[in-house]
Image (cartoon, rainbow over all chains, first blue to last red; front, side, top):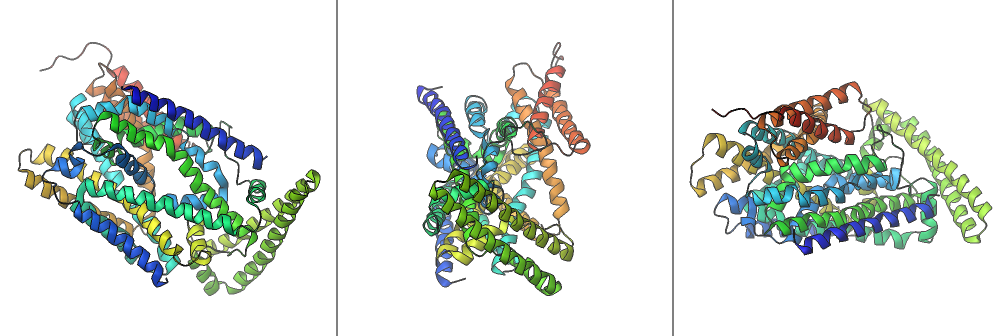
Length: 32
Length: 559
């Protein structure tokens, strides 16, 4: 597996964590 | 429909079909026709993967679901990025490196012909029927909304798709998918923009109203096996479903087999890993925005015009009474929402809580009237009635500026066509490679196999259109097929997992596959309340367990 793909995997994890965190914040602000 | 809207639709169809015909030049054998000589760039394949998964029902059904249930459906996709990363390091290099045409072809190399034939047959059966459903679902909605005949709607969706898929092969399918993704995302963004600009209250306050109505709830951490949309069913069941869909379903596998290299194939799948959840959240948010729009504007009692016609004709007094009551209730709801916004803007926390509670009560009352109205339609028609799929089309036609109906219809057609084209292309591949070439005619000229492939695509296209036309009368049969699909999806994934485990044997794979399907069937029959996402986990685990047990001990001597 190339370094580029490994870096991409890392980016996927980071972006998912950010996406879920944003959804969580959206819920906390409006659905409380 | 206004001629401007028609013009937009006609220009879109002419562009997609014309480009498909242009790309038909150059395919001289089935490797070019089905796999584009494994030459496509990752970004085009990635958009094709996303367009194939995003069907018309996603565009009209999921947005409707956003309007009625809010954002929680996004949890269904939480397993997708995990599945994409796992596939990137497991199945993708296996299949791409094996230079196969179909995923099932790889199973013969690893196990035996019967495992390949059975898995391919299951794919043909389920995808052949589901292709009909993918055409019929939007056709039924368009038919009711525009008042066109169902057959005409099926032809409008099916005919151009079959035409460019037959003539252009996978090149046409992929490049049409690229354009179609832009049309779909562009339409969703345009509609969101119009909704934001037309919202009568600030968007922050509007979201607070949506939150009070339960539409902004995303996460449900309860571990309830009967609830299809929880964090855990999404993360665990969703991962297994996405592993099955993207790793073993030919309609998706064929997308990334067209990529230039293993790395490009991986990158194409990772595009979905990046964008699927944000895209799905945006589609659901569109539904929430439509809900908010109708909170402040007059709301139709029925979103499906047919329901209104049926009630007016069969039970006019009941209809008038319900419609009058609904008008009063929704007006009270709008007043309560405005009062809640005013309280929120005043900064008085206690008044805001009280006003939001009052709004919630009105929203609940409106829901009761609508449920009662739909139940009345059910009594008249004798069938259960839901109108979730009609909310967005009706909103677009009644409320958006000139041209938006055309853009929306083009986006619905794009979403339907991109899924149908990929499925027809993969159905033809499995038919020709796994059956015709494998069992009937091994030797033949490139021209012969190319011709057979085009005919197979056309026959599957006609079959799907026929299923779509009769889908309403085949209702229970299609439901059976869909349930049957959930029986074997996880089980096929189990066979592919076995294929990657060293020293597992053909007998284990074949018996494991049957045991997996039987176990899921039994659970589905005995405990029908278990949500379908968990069936994928059960099927895969059963196949791997049985397969490993039957692969233990010394290998049988070959004859």
